[in-house]
Amino acid sequence: MPVPLPSALDELFRTAVLWRSGASANTAPPSWSYVQLTGRLIELSGHGATAGVSAAMALVLAAQERGEPAAWICPRERSYFPPDAAKNGIDLAALVTIFASEGRGAAAVADRLLRSGAFGLAVLDLGQNDRLSIAQQGRLVTLAKQHQAAVVCITEKGSDAPSIGSMVSLRAEVTRRQVGFGRFECTVEVLKDKQRGPGWAHSEVMLGPDGLY
Figure 1: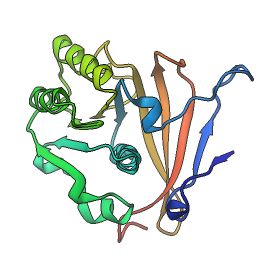
Figure 2: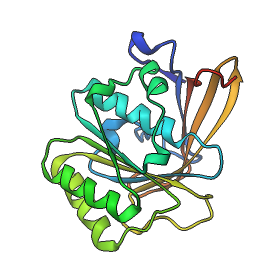
Figure 3: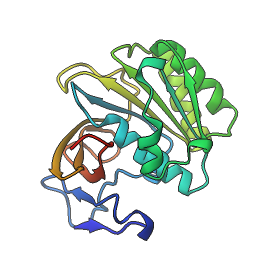
Figure 4: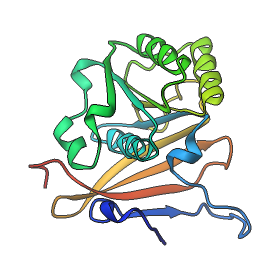
């Protein structure tokens, strides 16, 4: 069943949460939402043309709507496309973007930002450079819990590849498919969830970038 969103976003998003098989009728449904992902280290993985950036941007939008500052940390060559983000509701002036060339550097930047207590969301676009030490993972998890922030890592690999580490609380594979003119369904398929268990998914239909039809 579609989950209602603010009216200003009705034309941009249609959201659905797909129950995992065997879920109890008395169990609250899992949710791919900023509020339910705070205090956690999350990994969004995919191979080839994926929608990891779109899925993470949806969380940026949700954080901004709650007045929570967000940071996006990435290599310069993997930066998001600002006009597309703005078209989908992102306040670019309120999104802190920092360029870091590799995973450990990105983690160090995220560590400093979260330690300040000023950020509710940190997105690390790691690509294939996803090596984070256990110590770095542990610090990010501790800071996420301490400041009720969400830490989201975007990686480029298949679902059969290892996660960035054992400290990841939720890992999901992200895919997209075209469902209409200029509209794409982005699906987050949860592979690991320490709180709710794997096997559930979340889908959104989003507007594609100009020229992608």
